[in-house]
Structures are given as structure tokens and as C-alpha cells.
Length: 151
Image 1 (cartoon, rainbow, N blue to C red):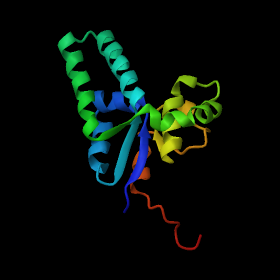
Image 2: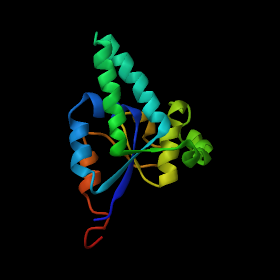
Image 3: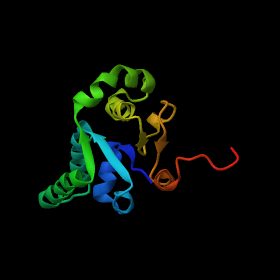
Image 4: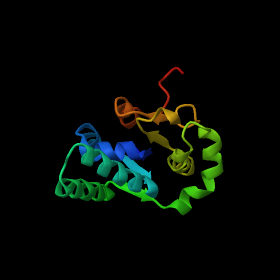
């Protein structure tokens, strides 16, 4: 089986730090998938983690530990530099439309890499790129690219 690439949205990066299912999926499929995220998604995840944990009353030490855990994801998730996906900005903005134009880097990254998106954000649905949620992404990792016999 060849490695398949998938772009992770910032909300998946947050779940990779705070949850259990996303880290399990990353670990289980690291050998058969290439995980990508636009560099800016890591910045967005840092902001969200800080806000979420502060609202939960977590200490500065706990927030710092969560941010460090996010940084360790770099050994599993490739941060794609802006110059790689910036040429796809206008196409991504046109596809995502008014739903959430701030999400254009994730879509542009997927267009640049010609791959799917892993997100919990419905704004990507209908943007012309396969979109997977955590509940269904295991199918992305396990299904063969080949057509079933007889189709």
C-alpha cells in the first residue's frame, strides 16, 4: 500500500493534543499516510488551545504543556510552508466562498498536495476536495485506491 496524504485542519491538531481518538489514529496510520497541515494551522491551534484551556481554568503550566505537546506533533505532521500553498489561494477562496474565508490555507494546501482534508468543520464540504471527519477518516486510511472488481 502506498502512503496517502491528508491535510489536517487546526481543529484536528487541537484534538490531537486534547483528545484520545485523533492521537490513536495518527499513531495507527503513520506508516501508511502522510499527515500535512498548513503552517498557519499550527498557529491557529496554539491560539485555540490557549483559549480552551484558560476557559477550563487550567494553570499556565498545563497550558504550556499542551502547547509543547502540539510542538511534538511536528514529528508526525508536516507543517507545509505558505509558499507551497499560496499559489492556490485564489482558487481556495473561490471554492470556500463566504462560508469561512479564513480557512483558505487548509483548502489551498489540499489543492497543492492533491489530497483530502481531515476536519470537523463543515465549511469544507462541497469545496471539491474529499473531506473526512474523525468518525470516518479510518476508511480513508484502510480503503484501497483500486476499484472493486466488476465496476
